[in-house]
Amino acid sequence: MNAPSSRPDFGDSAAGECILIVDFGSQVTQLIARRVREAGVYCEIAPFTQAEAAFHRLRPAGIILSGSPASVPEEGSPRAPQLLFEAGVPILGICYGQQVMTHQLGGEVRPGHETGEGGEFGRAFLTVSAECALFDGLWQVGERHQVWMSHGDKVTRLAPGFAIVATSDGAPFAVIADEARRFYGTQFHPEVVHTPDGARLIANFVRHVCGLSGTWTMAEFRKTKIAEIRAQVGAGRVICGLSGGVDSAVAAVLIHEAIGDQLTCVFVDHGLMRMNEAREVVALFRDHYNIPLVHVEAEDLFLDGLAGLTDPEAKRKFIGKTFIEVFEAEAKKLGGADFLAQGTLYPDVIESVSFTGGPSVTIKSHHNVGGLPERMNMALVEPLRELFKDEVRALGRELGLPQAFVGRHPFPGPGLAIRIPGEVTRERCETLRKADAIYLEEIRNAGLYDAIWQAFAVLLPVKTVGVMGDARTYDHVCALRAVTSTDGMTADVFPFDATFLTRVATRIVNEVRGINRVVYDYTSKPPGTIEWE
Ligand code: XMP
Image 1 (tube, rainbow, N blue to C red):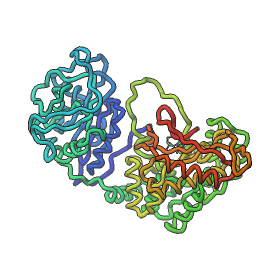
Image 2 (cartoon, rainbow, N blue to C red):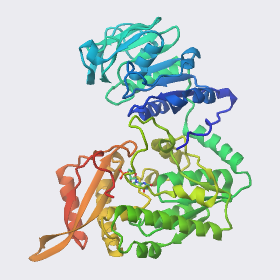
Image 3 (cartoon, rainbow, N blue to C red):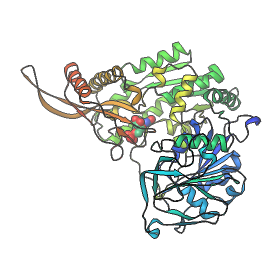
Image 4 (cartoon, rainbow, N blue to C red):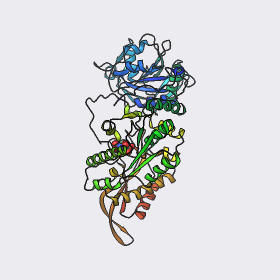
């Protein structure tokens, strides 16, 4: 994983129009970034080990120090580069960030067990005890407000210059401030939704305290990116693999706007798409946008190769490898290209700090065009590297992509193959496509599509006995999955009501031959994953 190579160029007038978030390994650091972006301000996350370099590169107008699973009093726990406190730039320390700032500036932090009070976890109420720039237009002295706490250690003596501006039962130093230096610390987490005013507190920090005007809009991004793409590509040729998903589509449309027909898109149709999906992608690109598109119909190649494969990793590997081979062959036919465009997003490039040590285990080998750049020896054009998924959707809308396309649920590279545990056959794909289409149609009719991160049907290699009319049936089980999520890393089960699920189950069993039983998957992630394989 690499850090973004440079910050977006807003021109000299906007130098420093951004916030640096120093990551100490909190689970929710990305949420801080989202809240800052929602306030119309660009920001980047840097691990604490690289924060100094990021500071010099970004020249940020403000700094936010994240939470952490570590403990400040413990030897070897992370510290912020001291230079950040001497740069004359406002700082907001959140939880561990507050504690580490206090410690590094001469205050005291003690472990929860030493103070005899233990930690404080979950919903808490604080009382505002003094005015503070963070509270401007939001909280008044004497008011009580709900916040979300999650800490074991706490500040027990302030650093010189700081004053308490809010207290809670478990954290007498719930919010501290040094208004002269514009340093602030919250013991609670303003970035999570369980702190109802949290987003507005963060907006106050970045806009009022740091003085940023909120120029981070997708209209602005579109303009600056187009100029960047032109500068990078020059007269070169770019090839872009379309997956049918939102990210590669938005990247392609943006690049096409920048360099026109120097871009060619290649859509490798592996025959594992949902109902009508391949047709829609081709129509959108060829007819709507008039973007040069090569549609490779490779269903036979993929399905013949999948015959007999039942192991999830073997299926994934075969599809990934075959995809690369087909893509490469098409690129050759086109006479080669100088650049490969990819819809890589910010969550893929953030180097989060891991406290577990060592490389993480591979749960699934994800299929995207990841192996292509090395193999084809091409430079990358990745215009979405700084964006979160919701920002990509906003950019898609800005570029005029239809809402129905922009709002689409994510779809995995290996497609239906990982929603058919066991062997994948043409017949099983066909059966699954029908069930899936009914499920999604009902979700749309119920107005629930946009409230769900991902919903899909899974065809199980399990047969059960049923009865239809007077006859015995012996057919497959179909599982339905629907989850809410912000980034696919964790997910909660979507709580459909029973009437809805009953309606979908009845329709699937009645309308799809080969399925006689429908079940709903109630597993969150973790411990489950979103896809079944
Ligand atoms: P899991 O199943 O790992 O999925 O919880 C998390 C998110 O990633 C998607 N997914 C993939 N996306 N290539 C992709 O581009 C893949 O190989 C792949 N596998 C899973 C999944 O749909 C969910 O949104």
